Image (cartoon, rainbow, N blue to C red; front, side, top):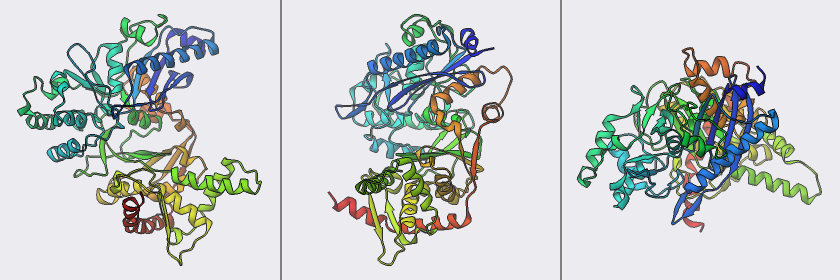
Amino acid sequence: MGRREEIMEGSTALGIEFGSTRIKAVLVNKKNEILAQGDHSWENQLVDGIWTYSLDAIWEGLQDCYRKLAADVQTKYQTELTTLGSIGFSAMMHGYMPFDGEGRLLVPFRTWRNTMTEEASLKLTEVFGFHIPQRWSIAHLYQAILKGEEHVKDVRFFTTLAGYIHWQLTGEKVLGVGEASGMFPIDSKTKQFDTGMIASFDELVADKGFPWKLAEILPAVKVAGEHAGVLTEEGARKLDPSGKLCAGIPLCPPEGDAGTGMTATNSVKVRTGNVSAGTSVFSMVVTEKPLSKAYEEIDMVTTPTGEPVAMVHCNNCTSDLNAWVNLFKETLDLFGAEVSMDDLYGKLYNKALEGDADCGGLLAYNYFSGEHVTGFEEGRPLFVRQPDAAFNLSNFMRTHLYTSLGALKTGMDILLKEEKVAIDRITGHGGLFKTKGVGQSVLAAACDAPIAVMETAGEGGAWGMAILANYMMRQEEITLDDYLEQEVFADAVCEMEEPQPEMVSGFDAFMETYKAGLAVERAAVDHLR
């Protein structure tokens, strides 16, 4: 069957993901090959001190993104998009969208970016014995209760952005388990919200006299592979106002960007993980069992099939490194030297590998903003050295590569050295890995684990969501990790880098200096205003 016929017959899957700056749609065939794409750029707004996206922006963005996808299909295959095999929606996780009994949004959408729930986060973590980050939906709900917000008594349902889109298009109040794990803790045995913690929450707010219990206002939870409703007539018009798209198309459970990222990097199997490293950096490691206790530095979420995942999320990664590279470029321009940024990055990154394994006594902090993993509410980019340190270009660049992963390694060391979490493979993706072999070897040293980089990692979360939509339509029984391994990534080009013992011990030595120097960073934050 040709690609045009695949589209006409609906042998396809559509994945749409709402990122923080772009909404992206990817249409694939049954082999998960990309047939067409569409996207829409958008930005959050700061309204009355709240980071939000309006409902109008959400629907205009979705419709524009789908319209561009349909136009891409028309241009490439000379056919209209009228049906699909399956659909899946994803979005940035967490946040707060509360609705009343008539389906009206009670307060503007509060995104994951809002850090206004510290009191709730600390109290819930204490009550549950489970780390509840500020961006989680339950923290937003409880903070609204603590503040005495009038709308809370009227809440009859609350969900995330992905859950809202899915509900409006299908009528089903449901989330995929990975997305749900960013609303409220999941019981890894049942793959459902933790009933003991739900009871603890109800007891915590019992004196408020609300006309609801928590379980009544949470969405239902489904795992990857389960059906989660069909596109209604009304939903079809909301997605495609032109009226060309037919109703009745099945939808898979909506997932979060963490789950689609795991899927797109073949990292849903136990003892695997992925690291996204660019402006910020985070790791996701699929553990064999829950951690022994709660850690402030680590968030516990799940894969799209409900396996426990330890997440280390850091605000800062390559911004300071990029600033130094730009300074070198400015110096070269001063002398009239014509060097491309790609060539400059490549030369400087490779030069770093010539440096001392422990960076020769140099130290830097890449904190453009605060870093909760190490306890900083603000940041000051900083470079420090001993007078007798080995101050040369290779050590300088190596220091900035190491410190780009310093906060991440702080969290990863908890997993690897304290919790003894076993890792067989981590897949790296993002700008840090653009120069072949360098970012990989540094991350391998930081994690003391093999690091893979795949060509397909650049396809992103919308592709991962399309894969999950395709997986739901499988006729034969197969686990998600086997489906990815055997059918999606069987022929993927993959570069593997093993950890080098000398770099591992060198990075550990650098981290001793890094931890000792945090007092210097604290002084900079406190005194440089």
